Length: 508
Image (cartoon, rainbow, N blue to C red):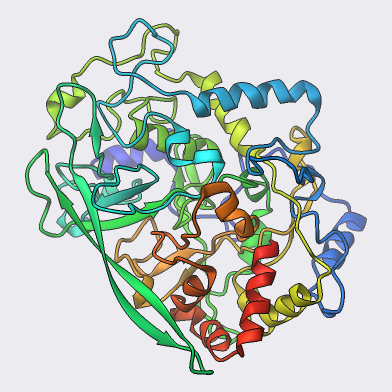
């Protein structure tokens, strides 16, 4: 897009000017009912920092407020609807789940409601990566063809052939041949883009008491390239699929509350300088606060889901209307392949109503209730968590907006343990791949709710953005940068203190 065209686009409302309001970018995705003075005072009171650790705080077991589910017998604790959902709306939740579980097939097909897969893809459906709505994992071996981890690709903006005006409204400059993601599968007649391989180098880390933890550092390579060599300056970032619970509640946290935690210049001198990611909304054609993804690269759940359909499955939606998914101009045969846009007036493989149903489903996957909140060792671990200043980034609680059209997530006290901000996590965790305004060392603070159920839901205990950590202890020891002091506090604890802190995390 040339400068004159960009100026016209701004003038006609197609894109917004770069300058954002002083108090934020706005929340067009929410129908907010402003709080009364009495409600604002209630919120201030309930969000006050914890002072006593001899007992659980009021409502602390309700991780998602009234939306929390207490079904302790279910085999799928991440797949239930919000507990406060009206029965009439559960049908929309079930229909959305149907789209989420659908396995797509290649075009042309007699099943026109399910065709349009690829031509290049990572999984045939959302559930391929988010099994039981849980956390993904890296390949367990060179022969593991699992799809719950993908490799994001890009090149430095200065190395791209795209103009600055075009790159302004993209999270990254795509790799010229392979786009923004490596697709390791393909429909018949097309070569897959390549196969990712991960190899680990192990090294010891000693605790202050003399015991040793072994960490593993991953190294990534791509084999069986289907479309020629990668750009010499390619940036590669592995991403495992995150759990799906509580996302609608995170979407409803007031933007002003998130920005109030930001301290990009570290003016208070505490070493924590979280900052927001500013991202472009395809739906609302304006800059918005990034909330979702490992680097807070997506503003809304609708855009997050649409991006996954396009890049993971190769399916077109209203926000990503191109039937070829992530196929680049260098993959011309892929772009001209048959697609599945027949059968609806919008000529899309998922029309607007389908995307709306999937979004409703992902907004309303309930968070399980906390466990053992009053156990002495859990309370001790909670105290140590706060004393180590883990809560400086993993902010324990928030109150969502009061919403006029979404009762399930309206005005709820929630306990996600995240500030949704970007933090420099040090060289050890750096992927050296920027995304919007996030640097190659920054990651969004991931929510911790439900983390203690990871093995029960997903069948493993791999953590961090690439699954390198095989336990919560390993994950903590990988923390660096702004979290280095918290890591050292954990490393220098006694064995019983570390066990208590881990017990607290497992109770979430």
